[in-house]
Image 1 (spheres, rainbow, N blue to C red):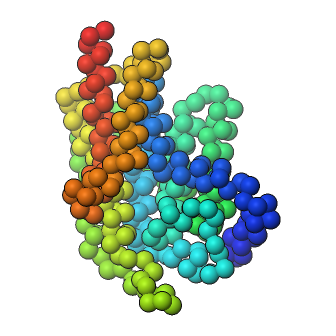
Image 2: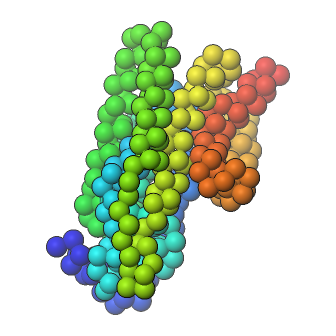
Image 3: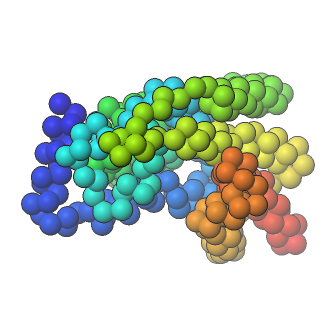
Length: 311
C-alpha cells in the first residue's frame, strides 16, 4: 500500500511536469538546514525560555530519531521498489536508511513549539500546516513512505511532550536542572556508543555495491546525537557563567540577531566538509553539528551580553 501511494504521487508529479517539485524540494531542504535560524532568533531576541525549549526539543527529537533509524535499518523506497524514482535532487539529502523520517523529526519539534507558543490562531494553523506539508514533501519527492513520516512526527511530538515535562519539573525544582542535564548527557552518550558499535546489515545491489554502508549511519548518529550532547554542555555553561537575557523585539535586538545569523548560516551550510577534513568522518560530523548548537546556546549569547552591558 505504501509503495502504491508513492507511485501514485510519482505519476501525478510526472503528469504536471514536476511543477511542484522545486517548492517542495526547498521546503524539505530548509527543514534540515537553515531551519536552525528560527529557534536561534527566538532564543536570542524574543524569549530565552521559549527558545531554549525549542532547541532542546529539536535536538532530543533528532537524537531519538537517528537511534530508532539505526535500530530499524529499513531501506529506502527506491531500494524496495525500483520503479520509484526520487524527484529532483531529493536523493542527495536522503542517504542511509528510511525509517523514520529525519526531516519530519526535525521540523515537528521546531514548528510544533512555535504552534504551542503563539496565541494567534492563524499562526498556529500556519505552523501545523508547515509540519504537514514537510511530511507530505518527503512522500511526494519519493524518498520516504507514509509510515516513515508518521513515526518521525510521533517522535517529534514525544520530544515536545518530554521537554514540557522537563521544563515543568525544573520550574518547580530549579536546583535539579544539572541532574536532568547529566541524565540526558549520559543517555545520549550511551546511544552514541550503541550506534557506533552495533552491527548493521550489509546487503548488495545487482552491481555488487553495498546498499547502505554502516559508516554512513554511524556518521549520522555522531552528528545528530552530538547535537544533543552539545546542547547539554552549552546549556550548563550558559546557565552557570553567561546568564544572558534575550534582547527583546526592538530595533537593536533584531539587528543583533540578524548579524548573529550570518556566521550561523555559514556554520550550518559550510562547516561540515571543513570539520570532516580536519577531524575525520566521525568527530568532524559531531563537531559540525555540535558547533551549531554551541553557537546558538552559548557563544553568540556572550556577544549579546557584551552589548547589553555596554547599552
